[in-house]
Length: 629
Picture 1 (cartoon, rainbow, N blue to C red):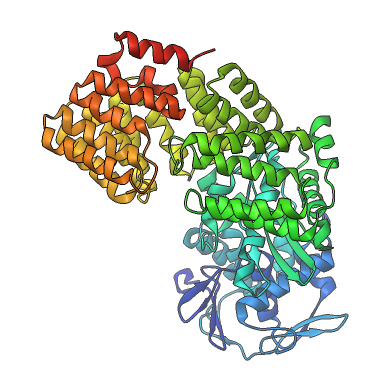
Picture 2 (cartoon, rainbow, N blue to C red; picture 1 turned 180 degrees about the horizontal axis):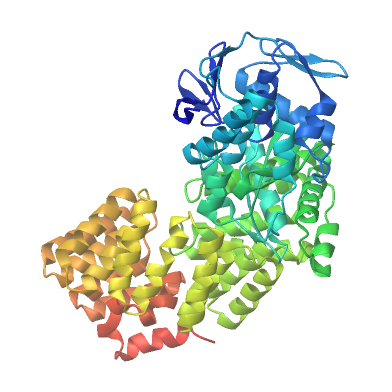
């Protein structure tokens, strides 16, 4: 038999083309994001076009006995997703007809444009399909193979049963992809994102799981990547995906758990609740997922989840909006604060909203993203964190915010470490807590531990450039400038929109005496983040060390001019004066930075830009007053 003449079929209907070779649905040549059960249902309906495919048959073939799901909800959700992809609906039927209490029928005319030769033996054709599809479409072999067998021999059920019943390794790592907003209203996007965020937070409290953070997960919104591709990139076993739909004061959430390396569905369920019970609903979903993956829950983790109480629906809505804008920090922080405050006006005992305020105010007064003086924002942040913990001592984010404040504002390092450790005890999957704790460990000179914490943060949030570049920051303080350069260039490749790697490159180049290269990188960083005054100050320091004094003075002038309309930390002027060798002026501005409670001061002891001041008694006095205490 001439095997080389076999070609997998391509099926056309209406404006769509179903490519069995690729396991893809296309419209106008553009791939439509459809996979898993919806794609397999389409394959079966196309194979039986014009005939009724019963719900029982779909259950047997797509949800075998070893898959634990709420079948009716799962099937309805899969069909709705398929109809959405086709632009179809139960009311306006062009492609899929619902046969009440029986099943579904494909209505449109179907044209098969490629097929096996008439003389081909069906069994041999099936074997060829298996071989060719595995070669041609390695990233989706199961779906492509199943589709080909349906179209050629009708053996889909046997194949899927065999594949789904194969042993699945335990799931120890998981990613929650952004839930789809099916409300038909783009203004409800915050609600779907908020549901995603809180589900991530619920799962992250299970110590036996590694849970990918929100920042990284949100980068897969509307992605065209397959689940196996995502799993490989994030190095996870399981993926949760789902949708959210609001109906007035009610919400419907559909969630599914997939063993991502093979795209094998393990569990799916739909829930419909009153908005008042949304938090309870999220807890139900998290518990169901943990049950499916057989993760071990510690008694204290269970107790925390049992403490969930109903919340005012309007307060919950404002809180979710606050989370949405917090996720767009630093630009969205101020707007997020407004929504957190609105939530607390409606429910003054809503602890998570206080935690959101604490994180937001701490960000606004921080050394790296600060837009306001620390004395203006940090007391508000501290009060909010303490109030959150007064209401609920198990909120890990509130402990992390309080630890950050103790380190960078109170300069109470013992209290900072205590709060960091409590935060991580409650949620070891919080990349921000690991990241901030790494900063603390750098400050106290525990560099090996700091590096370990930074790597843990990176495992949990691999696509956040701020966390990725932190390794370069550690190398800078350790004097490993070639490592700073290598890591910074690596981050530029993966996150070209971030100014941080250019900033760190500039620091390293300056220390190596490569002044022109340093100036180039600082200029790039300034262009990308024109309000980051510490970048401007670093550029001024390099101009000084490169003996370009006129340019350094121009930088000082720029900073003083900016200070007329916005907050410019005194520390920035100290950086430029230190580069000029004007130690007297540098100490004067460091003293002003002390009065401002600048977070930068905790790092000055190890900052090579202040080497010339370390023997000065005034400098030593400032360092003594900063800490440790």
